[in-house]
Length: 355
Image 1 (tube, helix red, strand yellow):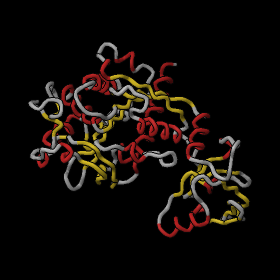
Image 2 (cartoon, rainbow, N blue to C red):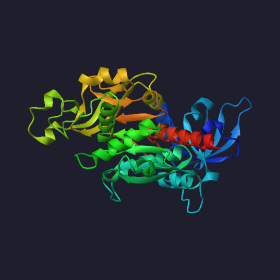
Image 3 (cartoon, rainbow, N blue to C red):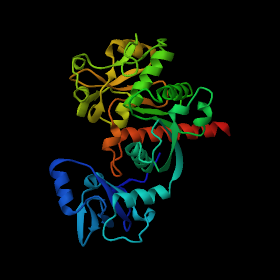
Image 4 (cartoon, rainbow, N blue to C red):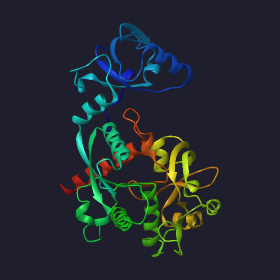
């Protein structure tokens, strides 16, 4: 599916565009930035050489030539899709996102959680919107209060949703409703994305309804659970200061090649930010994988599970880390982009089947 971001090398002569992303590293990137190829700047294609290399561009008050291979590393959006009123030299990230979003089709995403406040899950809402723009869609986020979800009303609550986010948080309140939502999306193959506690709930629901451990739980919710599929790491149990048991900051993660997570990132080694206390219990790892839930992201130092997914489903992923923290308008997080893409494709496929 196409999005609104194009390669500068593919823009025809005479066309005007705005830079949204510059790829590349080291001396190349430094040189490009020094020339003025930065986010938000207007660029006009002046002339293609007879052999299509180099390409001459107008940038600010000067003319600059780039090789086609260099221009391919710069992503742009055509100004024809952006309102020119009020332009003062550059376009801000918000202006680019707003103008593209307003011209996009809408996709409905449910956000299942317990915090029914305007600013709750703000980073997740913004990351979804950013990923929607990248997928040529305007994302409408529908809050679903997990405290009110039951097996009887979940179908109606999630009706018309292309995808479902299982939000982060802590504590027992609203947790049972998250299990209800996860069971429904898993058994109805609705693209699902769980973050932090959301990922832990995905693991617990699977243990209860697939592995057969009906009393499976997290030690956070039930210290005496006989099947502690979510637990504190052994070395943390002796720490009495609650803040001291939290895993904070950026940690490395190695992705399993061929997994949907790997496909989203396009690389094997990543770093993501954490803010949590409880972890996936590796004592159950073999059972999960044998039953169809794969542990596809692993911290190389601690061997802790960072990402789980069910490959047999269209898109069903949980992350222990918080990908929303690093998502921006011009660099939407790859997992959010992949989630929205899968949600759009799944919903359109179902709508087509109805006709």
